[in-house]
Length: 397
Image (cartoon, rainbow, N blue to C red; front, side, top):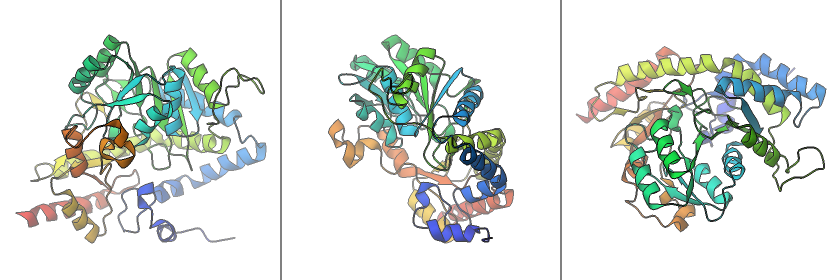
């Protein structure tokens, strides 16, 4: 029997691509999937074996069970598993009939998938700046955009870093404009806004289960949640070649199915998600207490009316790059989400925006830094990170 891989083996294998969510080669990684999987390895192995034994690789009982369990977790009646988070966003838009000639309002400070999905359905992204205190969509900026863009048919706020956007204000503005609300919940599995669980606040919600997420698969996977049975049916139809049943195609659809093995793995992890999120919140509270009052460090904490699940613990510093280099020299890995806002990316030049168009997003891109945070992280490790940050602050005085 082959010996079990060690963390150092994994580090050597994936050191070149730490941004993909794999462990860093540093003693303190920014995220540690190896530690998570070691803790539940027997459960995952049994789940995968069960799918192999049944040969239910596409659709099947594991998918149906996961959809029901994830819907219950999100406190909605419907969840539809799909191939990945980007497809989840695009299928939400297609289920609403959004396409060429329509506009969709979203933010420039997010992963590219948010805007890519709008482009994939042929609609036009209209960008809205963010709030500096939450890095989520600014309702006042949204109001100005909706006043000048009557073709906006959907508003797509991003629950960034695990913190929900200001959904009441956004929802009210969208309703007044006759637009649907699609939640980009790729980083917010289990978060709440004023008591309401993310995934059931908007018209539809899109989730990613990319491995590094709070609820991550062992590859690409995603889901759409909604309270609307007709929209859930439309997404389910579109994900599987437009088939209500085999070889009957009611619509032109896609191949975006959540496979049986990923569904089985996600069922295992879903059982642990509440505990993992609770640990993330506890670590974040310790970070906030330890870093409070440090000159030049702003903590991106949760707003009072929101319960973040801290997909990332993010601070801001005007001298972010120097701080990151200081931490790297002490073998502490960090990450930047996101260094270039989408309106300044080469692939989105066609949108016609220029530098200065979204000053808050541009400033955040220059200042944000994600410190190490993962459920298996020890209090001692967190204190080591905080000590290194305090050391950097003291040296700058």
